[in-house]
Amino acid sequence: MLERPRTLWGADLATALGFPPPGDATWSSIAEAGAESVELKVLLVPREGSTLRLAGRHGRVRTRRLHLLDTPDLALAHRGVHVRLRDRGRDRWDLTVRVRGEDPVPGGAPPPGVRVELDVLPGAVFRSTQVREPVPAGRASACRDGRVDVHDLLTGDQAALLAGAVPDLAEAALGVHGPLDIERGSVPRPQCRLAHARHERCRFPGGRVLEEFSARCAPADARVTAEAVAGFLTGHGLVPEPPHRTKTAVWADVLRAAHPT
Image 1 (tube, rainbow, N blue to C red):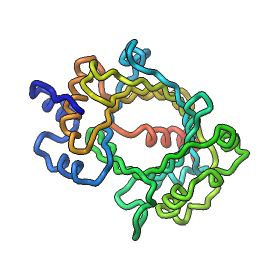
Image 2 (cartoon, rainbow, N blue to C red):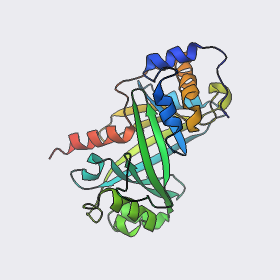
Image 3 (cartoon, helix red, strand yellow):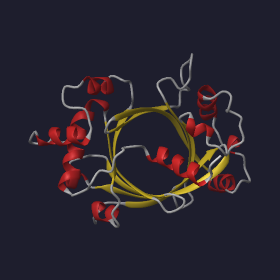
């Protein structure tokens, strides 16, 4: 349960950061969009050691490694579709198919196993429909190394979501791009008044670094969560780095720049 700020300064900070002001119709749209959750995200100017400092001795820091499965020219990412293989460490892997857009399965209902979430950034709202499933370590590493086709790892719900979103690319050969290395730290609730907050430091192929602070909440709590996020960032001297974009979009740009067509 989110703890509301005691003063109104958070609303002013959130608006200055680029979130809609209190009373804006965007917040009602977010609350009524039918999403299971909202994740508010802000890109930050990178600072060495930020993740460990924010997590503190009571937080948790984990290292993740993401691989993007896509065509050589990133045709899926260009259309808002992402197939991601994630190494969570200790032989734990998962595979996610995610579609950004209002209607990921035109003309029909999405598969029953999907999760719908809104990513709310300063100046932008993205609707994501995704299915994430665990994958045995041996099969996952074989896919990463090109010895197993990713289509052989997709569950029925994942294959259906992919086919509904991009029917012309549903069977396309997908190669492995990456990896994207992520250092993720959970920020303790007493430190930020947020129940589900985390800081990520992402290192892209080629060395570019991106940092992101995010907080997950119920759709009805999105506005007050944005205020708490803005207050936390300001109070800890964390500097936003516009334009505010998702790390997957930045990743796709990095990959395209490295391998221009």
